[in-house]
Amino acid sequence: MRKINYKLIMLLLIIMSLFTNSCDKRKHLTLNPIISSIVISHDNTDIKLGSIVNFTATVSGINNPPQTVTWSVIGNASLDTNIDSNGILNIATTETATPLTIRATSTFDTTKNGEIEITINYPIITSVVIKNDITEFFPGDVINFTAMVTGDNDPPQTVKWTVSGNESGTTIIYLNGGLNIARNETAISLTIQATSTYDTSISESVIILNNIINFVGIEWIVLERKDEKTLVISKNVVSYRSYHNNNSSVSWEDSSIRAYLNGQFYNSFGSNDRSRIVEVTITNEDNQYFGTPGGNDTQDKIFLLSLSEVVHYFGDSGKLGSTSVISDQFNSNRIARYLSVDHCWWLRSPGRYEENKSEIQNKGSIDLIGSRNLSSCGIRPALWLIL
Image (cartoon, rainbow, N blue to C red):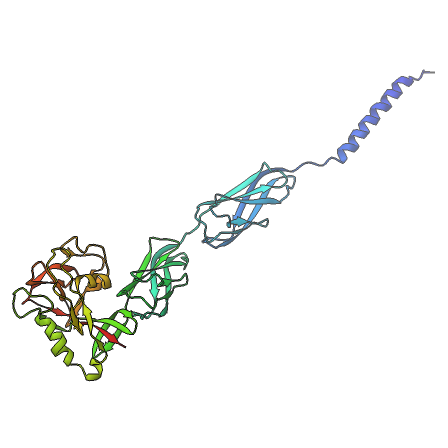
């Protein structure tokens, strides 16, 4: 009988046991996913400021990689441009950066991500159009202006409003375009400007004219209100006339034109209208550049403006006294018409010589040299009126 080798049998049993355990472990082994790429797509082909864009991410690889990702936006200038956990991107209306990068990062393997660039179609503004039906104003008025911004890619409609040319600090325009004109406003014209807040190089301006009143069949511009009196000047030239009946040296006090205004012209009004005109003291200053004497003060019902008054009421660029002809940004305010044509008009102040009188030229510049007394120039009478 063969002798049994127990040691060998025990060794074989141990080897079989180890092999069986190894097979059982292989049966329960799970293979880990491996991510190869993340591809991002979106649903919007026309991305603008204020757009909402939905992004999706497809995670590719082996062993069924999880599809979950975290989203982020890179390169945005505005904190209000953000993307949520569902891949929904909100582009702020204040965003200025382009392009933007959208990133999706795997939650399973954070070393793996995908990116896509998007380009924002920013607005292109072509014009700002101010809308209002007002061309004239009265002190104390409230006027509402609106502005329409035109262009491509839904330009923002927000504008910044400004008012210029006002003499009173309480004449203001509000953020919504509401203009509050001070009761003591004396400016001949106000310039209203609307500037795009998105593109500040695009704006529009409109000019509204100070209140016009009708008196004795003539249109008058209100220059100033003081107590119960209102200073007015004719809107345009009412007639053409020489300053004096000869070219000799003469002051406003002794001039033919003063006699005409306070005589024939004044007496052409009805008695009720004449009773509303206030006689006032007129100061006749010397020529500010040449020093030519202006003469005595006078008492007048109707008069011409002086050099200092025309600067005060029509716009002062600070040039009076420093030059013989003032041509500035206020030229357009001083232009007056006669029979639909721009014409010069007399001032009562002396010119370079006593036989010359200062004038406003047809394009609105102030001529301190002036023209000879016998020259023909327009008359724009001024007077203090009780309304």
